[in-house]
Length: 166
DNA sequence: GCCAACGTTGGC
DNA sequence: GCCAACGTTGGC
Image (cartoon, rainbow, N blue to C red; front, side):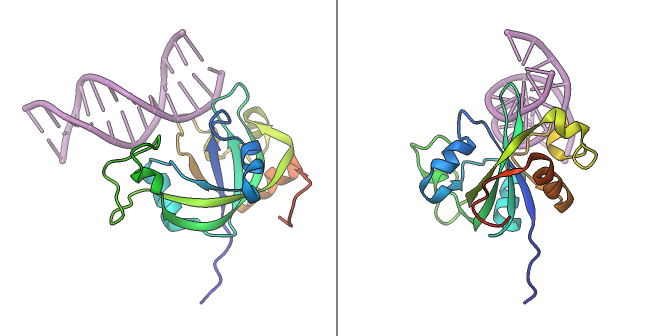
């Protein structure tokens, strides 16, 4: 079987809900990226995202939204059981063991950016100005990123003490 | 299957 | 706090 090429993603989160510091503080620096309730993002989580893929960690819904760090996918898509829990915030009564509907992946903290990349910085960077996250009205919480964009983010932001080679 | 109404996201 | 953009819902 041919080896799959590593892919790259940007994942959005409101830091008041789950921040990169929360990820860092999680056991092993790993968390389940669950609670996503959008079909387009679900399809990526279920079908496209694989262990080893790179993740740009983006803080939204704050005064200065920015890419703040790097994570790595460590487990591919699996059913998001929070959808089946009536007490969970994103409970979906239509989801069940035979029909999970929603999926999650596991991501692990890798590094903070030395310099968070704000939208202003991204817009002014020749390789980053066309990122999906900058497009008006884009609400997709998981979105693809090109290898060129991935490298440009790391170069422009700089990694603080990466735990493993990126 | 259409489409208006509604709720949510998220930058500004 | 405002509002544009988008996805979902539900009446018809």
